[in-house]
Length: 75
Image (cartoon, rainbow, N blue to C red):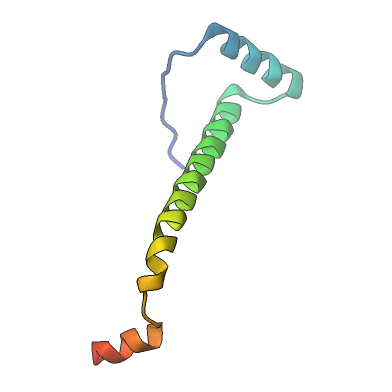
């Protein structure tokens, strides 16, 4: 997997806490930050999926059975 650099400005206290945590747990900073970003992205994507599900649930009553849809396609 290709690795790139991401430069961001963070609160100094957060940086100190991350460094301390990584030193205490024998974890590399890059690994820790990458894992945290991935977890946050997954959480945000789940929120979006739940919102979509809630929105689409209202449209579900307008749906037709799949078998009926296939018949109408004349495939």
